[in-house]
Length: 154
Image (cartoon, rainbow, N blue to C red; front, top):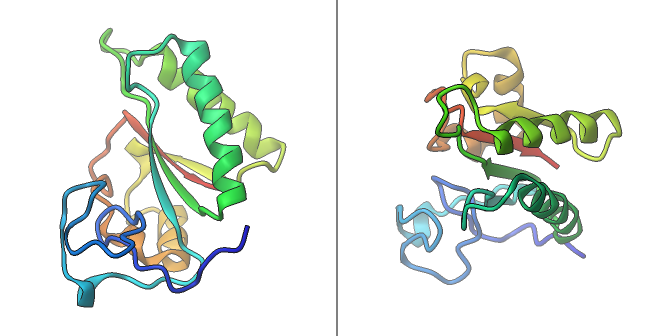
């Protein structure tokens, strides 16, 4: 599919705003049409793998499908919410998700993934990503060291 270069996106989460005024339908951030970012080639999607409390296999199947459809639909960045797990040492979905993302990167099916706890503007890797996709500079998880999310560049 063709990626529209002029699609307004939310300054906070980067999801398409369409004709929405007021609040972003995805993250709830206040939007004004004048403030909507136009970033050529940048499309962002929020993916919640823990919604509905799926078993690991279902969550991983969903992630594979979302990555495939994101690539076809022209999304360049995904924020994957996998949660940290209730055990206090990292949940099974988080571990499986990151293992899959590493495998997909090795196969060149994704460009890279950045664990939430490493998503900090002080790192060279994140600086480079923000330079390529400036709307990520206002991402709600930037600098929060959130182990329950992973940023994926498709």
